[in-house]
Image 1 (cartoon, rainbow, N blue to C red):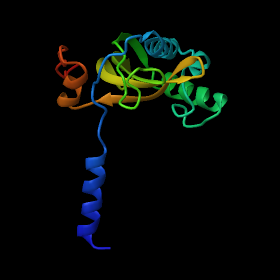
Image 2: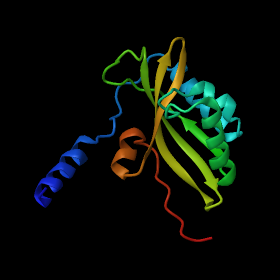
Image 3: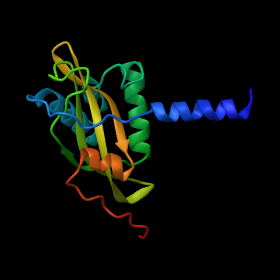
Length: 166
């Protein structure tokens, strides 16, 4: 393979990876927002077995309950993760489901810290939720890093300045 072909493939892949764009708000977002709130609350209290009830198979990477709970225990306890704030916003429709009947995207601002970042951090993120039977579950989570992506989902929020001091 020549290097030009490889660079072309990488460029095509990079162009195809697009973050969802904030769309119309869901008329009834109680289910999607409730799933995100229950999930984050359980995770913040290290109740990983409870959090399992609010995640899809996709979110667990198809792991068994015991395996997923064990990994969360290892990462959260080992990393001394503390979630001390969440600001869950109104759910938005996904293009394929404008009525938010089976899918919705839920923006959230998460405040947390861990043993490697004791000053804490503010994470701008969104969760894709899916309706599984009669229950809404978190299907994926995406943290936003660029100012452009953050402003798309959180247009009126200020991005905190990074503090590089203790």
